Length: 109
Length: 119
Image (cartoon, rainbow over all chains, first blue to last red; front, top):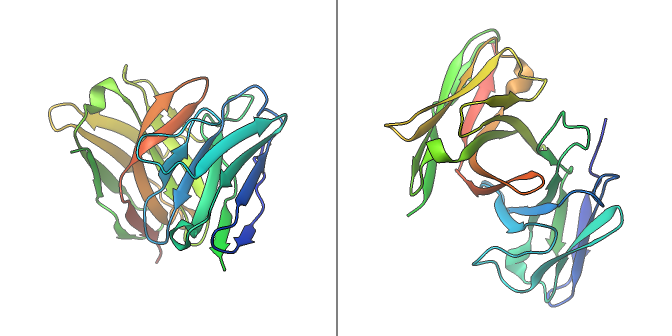
């Protein structure tokens, strides 16, 4: 079955740049989306359409796409950015119109 | 103000039933796609079901035939009827507004309601 693959964890120091990747064979043909989830809270949409930022999302969050990999970049990481991050797209054969990656725990050291 | 507020979760025995509700304010359920997404304890997000604005429904294989998504227009509320519950259905259930580009995505989420299936 189709999967979106994320690293389980990423660690960065405050002020550094964090990059979280998401890989999937269908990503060159489908948009990807990114969600932030803090403990005990609902997910929040951070990036849509690979690289677009919804209103209210800080500019330090950006998204990019290259081939079968999409990347969420957080520039100048702050302590409040510590959270789980999920990429999302769709199963390329349509059985799962909403498919999430396994999630990446971002730790701010 | 836009709000999605889930309710109806709780403890239920295997094989039992539960109906979740998602009361929406700030936009109209009937003119939007709406979805349920769940998250098992300590695990990732999993799509459950989507209701189209024309009332067509689409559900994950794991819940097909057991869960039914629906809405009440005048109450502006989304529902998830869950029957023949299994231990693996234990999760926080979120409702979310679903937008479409070439794929679907979820731009507004509720805070979730916990469903525990256990004897």
